[in-house]
Length: 174
Image 1 (cartoon, rainbow, N blue to C red):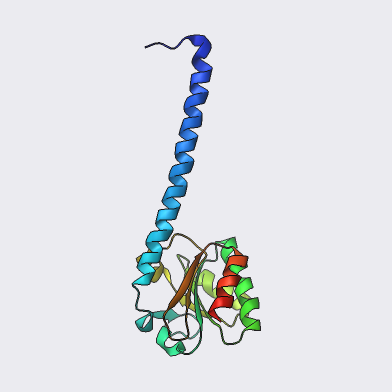
Image 2 (image 1 turned 120 degrees about the vertical axis):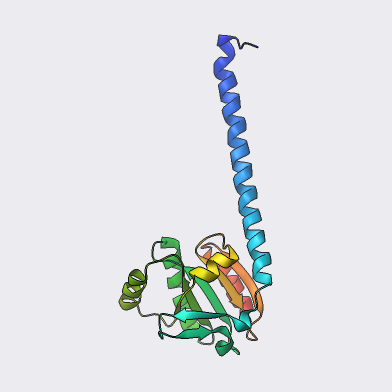
């Protein structure tokens, strides 16, 4: 089969449009599936027995030690500008709501960068190493938050940096 040269450019443009549609659909489908799979893995976590290495205390932090208070596990990294913006938002929010505890779980970051960040900022967060937990859940990206009820059970999750959506979830948590 040969394409008439006068129709060749139209044929290539048609192929390009179809390819673009397939790429966009596949990307959205993959992203939705990844978030859905993450949610199902989070649903199976026993948060009461979860512990992290704490940069703040140099020891381990157990979620069960925070029982009785609402908790946000916030996956973040120094190399993610969106994470740093959510850090600031969570600081502002937690300052207005003293009962909220924020566990800032750093992801795929050098300890020296984390310590430098902690030295330059004054946050009331519990800064912990979160890479292993992050990878075990196959979290779709940073920033991501897991919100826990006062009894340590899962309340909800939030993927991304949509501050308005996060604020709604935090308001419902409190």
